[in-house]
Structure formats: C-alpha cells, structure tokens
Length: 205
Image (cartoon, rainbow, N blue to C red; front, side):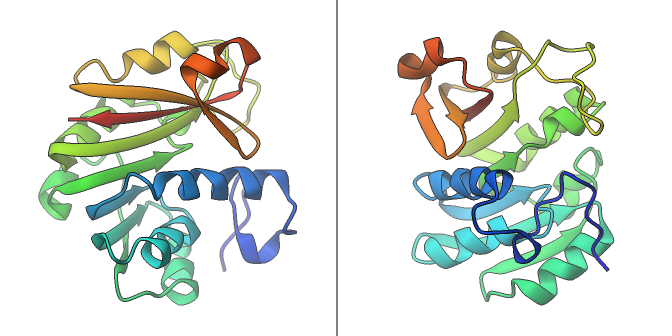
C-alpha cells in the first residue's frame, strides 16, 4: 500500500485541479522539450512523471529509468504506469555505488528532491557521475531562507536561496535557469522580479 506522506503526489488519489498535482505535472511537460536518449528520473516517487515522458517522448528516448528509495512507491509505479520504454528500480539517490549499478544517462531529471537530502554533495556528485558528457540535467527545487536554516516544511532539510541554487551547477558547461509559480514556468531573465517560489535548472555537462 503506497502511503501518502503529505508531499507524495499520487495523481489517482487527487482532484484534477489540485495545485500541487498541476505544478508537478507542469514540470514534466516542460521537460519533454529537453529529454533524449537514455533518461533517469531521480526520485521518481509514484512514477507518473516517468510515464508522462515515456508516453510523450517515445520517439526521442531509448529508455526511462525511475529510481526511488521507497519500495512501495516502486511497486505502485510498476503496477500503475507500465510502459515498454520505462523501468522502475529501488535505490537511494545518495548511494555511492549508484553509477556502477545504473550506468550513465543522456538526460537526468530530478524534481523537488534536493531539499530532502542532507548529503547534498553526495547527491550532486552522483548526478554528475551518472550523466554522460554532453548530457542534460533538469533539476528543480523550492527557494527559501538558505542552506542550514529551518524551512518550516516538515520533510525539507532546508530550502536554498536563488544564489545557492545557481551555485550548485558550477561544474556544468552550459546552464540556463527558469522560475516556476503554479503551472507557469518562465526564463529567469523575465521572471526575476516576480518572486517566483521555485527554480528549474537546465544544464549541459
């Protein structure tokens, strides 16, 4: 039985106009413009996002792998979102052996994950190792008071500032940033003055 932790997005149990659901689905639709080849959905949760990519991008991806530490979530994803191009596996995003276990990817998506991770450097190190040279990273997180400061969110270690978020990607050759509010996603140069609560980075290794 897949438990709802309060932050868990399970579309089949939510109303179609639920703001959290719409916001999460918007990110995956946004990502369809960037995914290609072998794709990793890092912390896939219930698997609905990987399924969106498998269905909408079947002509430009080879495979999408969804990984999550929650065995119940992976079991749910396998039953609810089967697709010939998708695979769901149990694993921890900070496992140092993950690159050996999964191989490398042309594109990695990680939405609303890093704010839950205490071992931030290990998480980002795994992402970098798992991404092929020339590969694309798509990562999002909510903004807040900054690293090491209480966020007021029960399941968040902290929430990065805009500056801290952008600094995560110093290793990457090319990067662009977007802000999100609800379902609206805009480039940072046109959204910076609007106090958007979430950031999305698109980076090339």
